[in-house]
Length: 230
Image 1: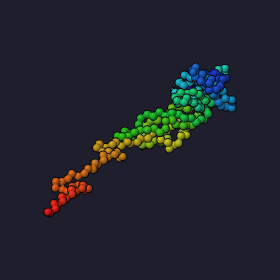
Image 2 (image 1 turned 90 degrees about the vertical axis):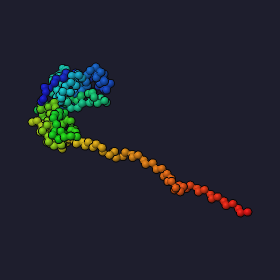
Image 3 (image 1 turned 180 degrees about the vertical axis):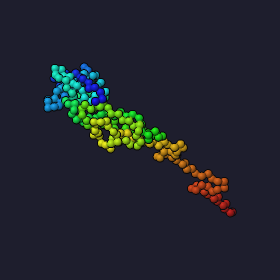
Image 4 (image 1 turned 90 degrees about the horizontal axis):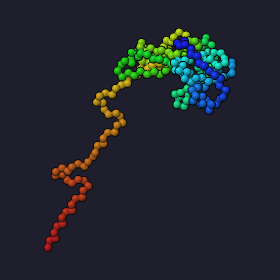
């Protein structure tokens, strides 16, 4: 395991319901439920600041020191977030043995860039930001480092990435860890973009040329009447 397993203090939570949970969060506490190993689920209360600090540092496993009970190794199974999606409001934990094989999602840390990303107009993107892996609880890393410096292809897939010993990828092997796309630049002096409206041509009547007849449609002057002979 990449980091030491943090220890979190927990107390039993007897009062349940969303209203009481909201009061706990206001007081700096975090509601949690502990499952696993054939025992009934336990409703617990954790210190919010301490717990979130451990989660942000990549903790997937914690030692839960329950007040009046033993300290147990627990796997973080699920996090529930508030409606804004930026704060943890509930935590699900499961009792585990350190040699138990589990499936977890671990965030990826990308460093370097592929050779093709150095070309003019190249844009490097990451389709996958976390990897689902299978391994023993004791081998779960805080994050997985992906070095792209030696990659020579435009698309670098999960199957091409060599995981550390003891880890097996569960994520689709064809999923792209990184992708390089070339964005063509508009040539200087290029014609206007398609769809741009052209300035309409104004049609005007042709000017009469000197000596020409009157414009079509104009009424001719009536001929003068001859005077009657006496």
